[in-house]
Structure formats: structure tokens, C-alpha cells
Image 1 (cartoon, rainbow, N blue to C red):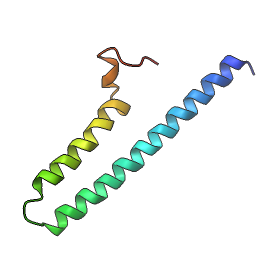
Image 2: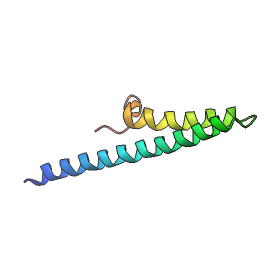
Image 3: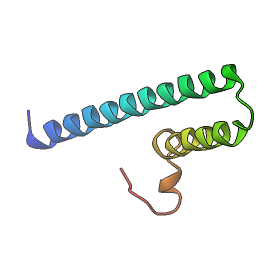
Length: 75
């Protein structure tokens, strides 16, 4: 196997690993968000909104690749 092919496979594995970590973090944030919503503490809507916004950012960056639109990292 050539070095170029091996490097490509390593980059692909790294991307998958990052994707898995992002999904796990999003899942954890969703569980926290759900627990807060079920408990219905008064005045927690801004916290739920902040968590939802925190979940939106990695979705835009890692899964929708919005950073590439503005000249970010090209791969």
C-alpha cells in the first residue's frame, strides 16, 4: 500500500472518529436538554435555548460543512 493511500485511510478514520465524538456530545446535550425540559423548572427556557444553540453549531460545522462556504478548511 502506498503512503498516499495509507494517509488517505488515516484521514478518513480520523473524520469518522470526530463524527462519532460529535454525535456522542450531541446525544449527551440532548439528554441534558430533555431532563431540564421534563423537570420544568421555572425560568429555564433561556438555558434550553442555549443548549439548542450549542447543539446547532457542531451540526453546522461537522455535518453541513458550513465553514467551507466562508473559505474555511477544504478537504
